[in-house]
Image (cartoon, rainbow over all chains, first blue to last red; front, side):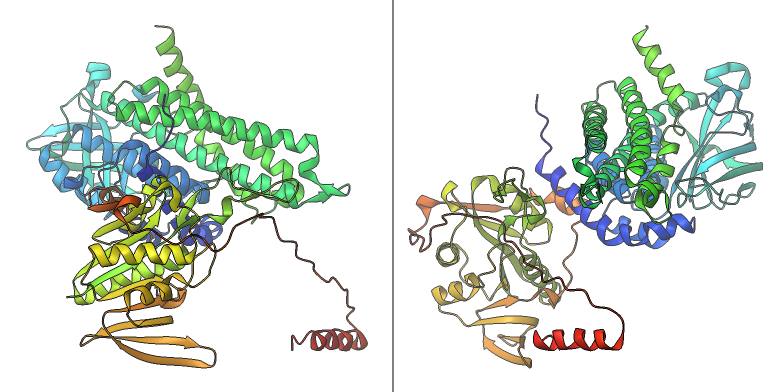
Length: 379
Length: 254
């Protein structure tokens, strides 16, 4: 077994770290407090090819493997989990779905500008009554001449208010069950589609989240992604790719929690010595470092399997489940280590703890991951 | 169109150096990076190429494990690289490095127009390789440069000297060592990094090069420095503020 990253992967990690320290760290507190989308930052990310890393060069990407993209998401999330996530869902779900299932025209027209970072992609699946239970969705797309007419309401759409290219899931044949859902590429300005106001959230505040409403929204037939009825399978494939990204985001949060804990424990003096010398603290940090290492192996392994074109669905769920739950567990510890200081606004660990919670919820809750994993191992 | 050579050194990233319990330096988990000012030299070469065209060649000497340094340098824009490589080329002294680089330039990169180096390396900061290399090649050397241009076969350089700025010109070929404020080095894009390994690299082994001088110095020991800080508390009333001012005057701080 060879656990060594390539020299290119090591260099790209360092370049992303340098980028994040220079451009992300200085604004991370502010964009969290103001719940603001930093459009200027995404322009810079695009200039360095970070908005379409694993997309082939002919479609505007950088042509890297998936693992390299995952490493970049991890490093970016170490500075700001919102920014890391926005890149992750843009690349890992929106771009990957068009790459995997789009036809040549769709790749040229929609994937290329996404990969160049000219607009943001959004994955529009969840509905007010359909979270983990996707089958409970009610949004429909009815063929009328050369258009599909979409009606319904979606919610919790990441990049909803700021997106340019929406991948929308709707029933084209509800009676066909799992084979009755289809996916459509809908550009922002399409009449009949409206993004709502950005939600105020506990964490992940600069990632923009909203409802998306459809009222007689006419979508040309050529914007159907894949074949009619393939929507559910595509959504699952999207999740498989995206979940490795959420695992990477969780790694970034965990690494930042560890960095912050080590820094603080070495300099905070109580009872005449740095608190790092207290076993209660040093063991918390030991557990944090160990779980981070384990989560990283799970995550990189899932990405590596994808790059090797091997099945990776179960591994992606395991990585996402473990990394996200450990991120939550250890960011609580990181706040504990910093005590009152860690509980105050402006302390990085306070933001990390709020940001960590969402990783256990979106792109499949921890419970949904356990359903996927148990379904795989109990076969 | 000019041929510009930009020299760089692969140095220990000091953020990875740890302090052992007995005060010794622990290099066991260090990583390396291109020395900071050399990044400025590479960036300046690319800036000049963007204006005048031509070719930028990256040049270094190092150990075989330093292949990552070549990719790092090439991801910053240079067209080709020259790598004097041998297991014994780690921890070279400036005189040795300059001799090696000069040998590569003479044998493989002549003619050239301009050589750009960082003012000093991130580890030793001896500020010697540039001037020594110029001496080997018999060309003018301009140090402490914060602005550089090429005009009609000459290099025009702004040198930051103690009390001001000196503008000098020298006939090409010439060597310039740059200060960090000459530019802001780029962060390479993903494509630049992935394409770097596709650029040509000429590796030159020890046996392909003339012998280099023996080192003048021998490192016997390396340990952490201890800074003794004078801690003195001052109050906030007039007398105390005066005492504070006198203390600063005594240390010639004001």
